[in-house]
Length: 401
Length: 133
Image 1 (cartoon, rainbow over the protein chains, first blue to last red):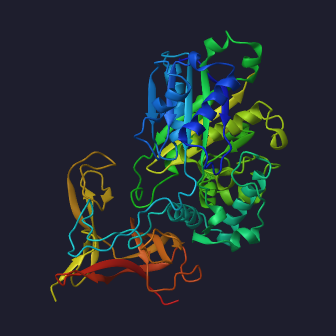
Image 2 (cartoon, chains in turn purple, brown):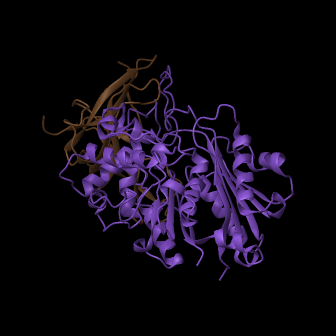
């Protein structure tokens, strides 16, 4: 049995528009912040995992070393869709678990402000002569002709599919908009969120429609940001100061899954099965269940996605996601607060930073350092991300005993 | 008329247009793209099967914002054709939440999408409601 791994230091930059900062400015700020938070320096770090999606071939980890410290340690540059940050963190955790390093640094950074609609390419003019190309022998672009490639449209269908499998008497559009209303309300307490304005249900439903039932505020906000974490082995932590040990957060489970084959999974991405598998593995590894969680940060890339993950993560009875939401449970004063950071819809979604930023949020509460938005007495939390393709990361975190 | 060509090779034109899938002979998993092996069981033997042309809407969205050059709004959907899931647009009805319902019965339809320099017409497909609404 490998020894436990702890989060020693963790930080995130403000998410939003940073026109005056480049990728390295943001990554350096987060990395140096995490080192300072953990009371260590780059010289203490034995492995670096760096996540970035938009410049995945740019060796962002080595670029970062050239700014904050070239110590010759192994660097892993990782890209795994929207699970890139969680994958970077897990890479550092695995290195420590394997005994190759006693301290590791994981960084996720993205410059995404103004990126616009993700998924799907501009449609070029049709060719002069029809010629079958690619794996389906298409003679012309299929996006828009055979369904949609856009992320808001794909995740809209994922939410609607849940409504088909679990028929709901009420108005689906209003239900999904209410989920967004919750997250925007939560964001007002998070100074690091890209958007911190409370929005009424009427405002959300009346905003620009992107892909029914997702209007603009129901979609994750493309923005700039970075997050970083220092992880440490249990034996190394025991040699550090009482204060470092007190603030360290135990990684009770770190799980990564991909999507196992299911009927239809290559027609509409299946974000459910791999999340269920990751959650089951994580709960077993941590020896806790959903009933033990004090807060959850889950991957609400769209309002339609949040709903299905209540069920996938076992936060409700099977099929009971709508009832769970309507009971008020996932509001910050409810039974099981979900996305008290404001979620991706308001905090923002700088892709590779997201999977570490959600862990920062949970750690912040477990340390009792979350200020105005502190969930009182929080001891156990779960962070979840999903990247299409697909990859799912689930981490369960616990306050030091 | 220089003839027709399907938008994708899994659309079979002719008197009875339909979609065809590659079915793994070992486990029955169905696919629409060129295969290296079966994603479900790893098998490498496939047979072509005809996908039923009638089905029901399992999921849909009405896309109002798409990449430049793609006309909006349109309805993108997943159709359950008697156990085989198919991606396609819902056509032949207004793209509004009032006109598209989960569970709605639809059937395959084909339509021209353009003619190339040689006069060949490309034909696409979609699904249209079985009952007028």
